[in-house]
Image (cartoon, rainbow, N blue to C red):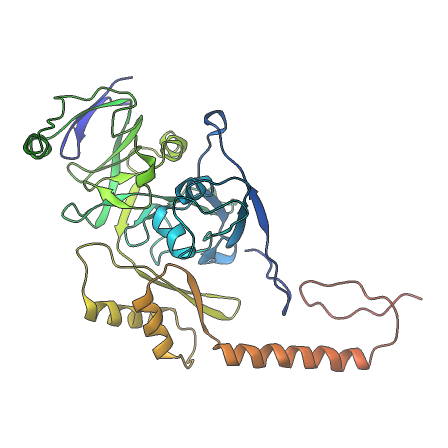
Amino acid sequence: MKRLSLCHLGYCVGAGKTSRVCALMVLVIFFQSGSVSAEESRPTGAKYSLVDHTRIVGENYFTVLNEDKPLLDVAKEHGVGYEEIRAANPDVSIWMPGVGTAIRIPARHILPATPQEGIVINLAELRLYYYPPTGENEMPIVETYPIGIGRDGFNTPLGVTKTTMRLEDPAWYPPSSMREEAAQRGDPPPAVVPPGPDNPLGSHAILLDIPGYLIHGTNQPDGIGMRASRGCIRMHPEDIENLFERIPDGTQVNVINEPFKAAWDEGQLYVQVFPPSSGSEDELGRLVDPLETLGNVMKESVELDHAHVQKLIMQADGNIHRIFPHSEEMKNRETSILVSIYDELETMPQGFYPYTEKGEAWKSPKN
């Protein structure tokens, strides 16, 4: 493994498909949330099998706090970022949610509309997707992790690139621009930050074939899920350590800005909308681009509530919303299903019938 390279704005030197619940049934699962000690530290990402080329993975759920802790700690324990958990829990206190509070974990994702290869980084979503290579008869999977990206003025560049080398325990040399800014504040940084707890690169870094940019760990994990870096991609230390040995040099990296995502799931059309990444505040494009996205996923001519879609675009809360069938249409569909079931029950002989989750034909009772 190579040991030397340039780091963003300075130098760094290396030193050493699930079943859906039956109609009209709602299943809410509450997990008891406890603290995670350093010894129990583990990756925060999630792994999903891509059954039948699905574009929607994961499920939202709730966790009930058995101790009061900041919302950021809950986010890390459950593999989501700051902006994600805030959008999912707008009425919950960031610092003191309170014991017994139910926290919604937004763990359901629409996969980006890109080739499912290598690493895909969606800046608007503040999320990284990794599609590991699979054998001929292996089920393809995706892993997803929350990330931090560049703040205003330090936008992470878009485009397809690749990883070039990996560094363990990198030293960090603050660039001249940062040193000048710090000097003006009266707090000049050292010429070099050696590996250790004060190193902003963390203990692992993966360099990209874009001069000066990389994916790295951090000594400030509270910034994950925020736009707070100088353009690089930050990950939780456990997450990049988990990926570090499994991502070979030359892995494709596709950096995109896809604030509007849409996909079908079991005959229903869903969208997921995020605020555009900084530097892309084009209001006209914000309304027109989703129409193109919807046109690309349409399987048939369906009537959409465009006012509702526009509201979701402007709301941009990061949650997944169904836009077809419409709520009234869905209600009528469920009523029709119930009527059919009751009509069939009226014609059936008495007896015990085993439960069939997937709607197989009713079986006659055994004598």
